[in-house]
Length: 169
Length: 101
Image (cartoon, rainbow over all chains, first blue to last red; front, side, top):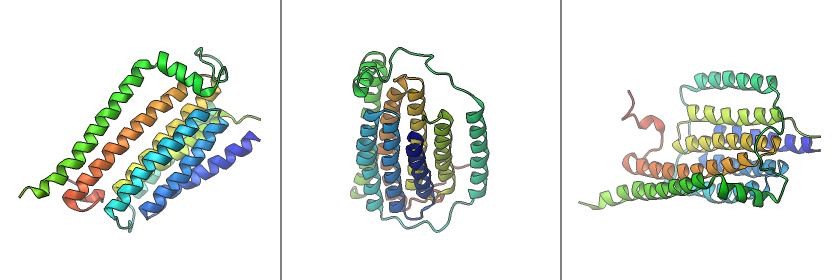
């Protein structure tokens, strides 16, 4: 049964991610990415990561993708007429890396239950993540907030400077 | 019946390489950033699959940090795209060759 769910989610994820790259219109690409985000969230639910599934939908589908669509509408971009000239080289590189990863993935066996104390099923998923996040990973958590602050200031400065320039003369 | 971990690895490899090929073959900068999102999602799938497999919640915490970095990357990247569009009225990567050898 879980294999059935995995196959459904995996098929939709693969098809939509290929569509993101292949479609000519950026709006359609963004909408394909939206479907892909929802199905990745479904995959997280089957992996007992319910909190991450919720965060995936809220942050990725709710915030990041809306930002993309906003910029696509703002710039009024045209369709791509053709792909880049290095497309054959890119396809070859992708094929070689894919064979390598598949060979590696099926060669090794991963043993269970080796590491760390925090068990996933010991409490509610959100509770466990919160405990680990605010004890073991407190410092990286603070660094992450710093990264967000820097990104916010950087985005404001990058977008503002060019806006002010044409009004100078 | 549980799903073997190698299935998740292959799924994430396909998504990651789709993103990689997308970065290389598209000319539109917005699609290139969307392809980077694909790659980040592929690594997140790997993290969560291994977190489930090893019964260890640390992988999910790292997905959290990857999400933060993705949000920051989108904000700065889209600001750069808007700045580029204002200066050259184009978002085709072939039009920006100032730093190219």
